[in-house]
Length: 541
Ligand SMILES: [Zn+2]
Image (cartoon, rainbow, N blue to C red; front, side, top):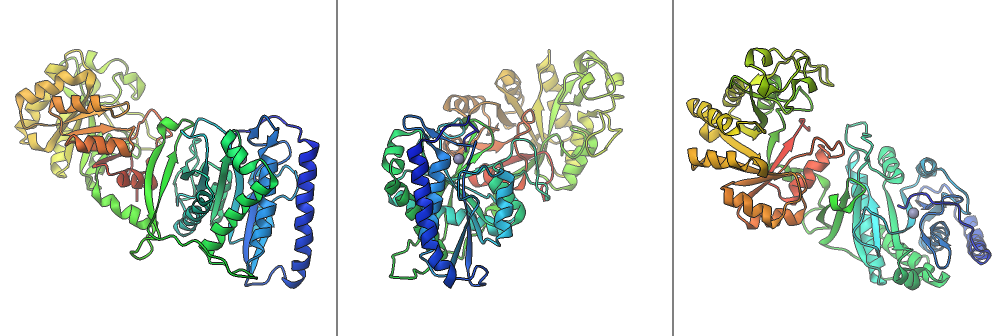
């Protein structure tokens, strides 16, 4: 998990210790490899991957100059030894010495060995992505491409976390981390961040990455890493977790395996380099009900209402009539639009205040008359839709009415926003749409919400929050008479806070942040968190 560091000299004693471990292991292997042909079909094949190696030292315990790469290798060798005490288990290592194996070559090695599972072995170091500095985390596949193998990855992760916590290591849960460089799988879903996990997903084999401890945490180091005996105990815990999940049988003697039933594990979703952006959820595995699959997560998507962001603003030119029409055809609950007003008082829709930004015309909308603004052609979008002009508020309301779709009107800043909002309300009322409309504004535009409330005490209003959902902000929403909060920094706690205050909660992806996902799995997340509305920029099938 750590970034690459400078080459660090491994002490002579450590080198000898590793060599010794290897020798012991190889000698115990020799006797077995004769009786167990490598490609026996009955073999369950495990590819172990000791993280880092060579120049890639990984995390470090500074005081003792203990490099993660060496600890990982020791764990791998002890783990191989432990796993080969079971019937029909064959173990391969991606490296058996201090060699520097290219990250991208590790999963292909597992594929070449016909491995049933790849287990990458690591230890952690303090960083910015997690808000804890000790204990064990298991990085798993989130199921972006292959549900079945991802579920295996997550379930095995649960068993290993349980086994590690049984020897006293703090359980920090499972971790999903999505790519931050906008790379996608063949089905369009955002890739996983870590090479091992991503390539396992691509190759359709289950894979996990175990961060056993934090090497730079004194307590973790002294308790679990400081001696070879301690490292061996870690490896033995891994082996017990793996054997318990796959129900391996010992070649000699009996062993009490772990059984998990209705086991709830914490999952952290990481989307940026900073833990403040993490999303937390819990998932119950091995439930009494028939095996809970990832599909059940998706089924819960019926619990929230879908809102199209500027229509379907990623698939069609945002805020255009075409985009609203498509949102209507898709049967969305609501279409969001950004309200503006021209210099001659005509209401229209645009996220940008200046035509220069996304059309072939120039100037601020509020400084230009409608006859000029209405000729502005919105730039061709990534799907090649061109020729769409700025949509009037009038047309937008008609489209919403035609499709029985709620109009979610985002009130944009205007010099005379009160006049703008009064006009908009009157137009909606004339069309008999007062009840088919939601007004949305942030704190800076709260006077508009107050105006609407005066015009119509029953008007539906939402409070837009671009920052964290705090108690103070929720109170403000309530004070203004809003029925819901629309936010994009949401965790389990914010859902509870908002619901406890008697309000509904919507999630919107932040369009200034390309890392914000708009995918099936992200929708499943927010749905699982319990939000009432989810804003989508495109139709996710
Ligand atoms: Zn590592």
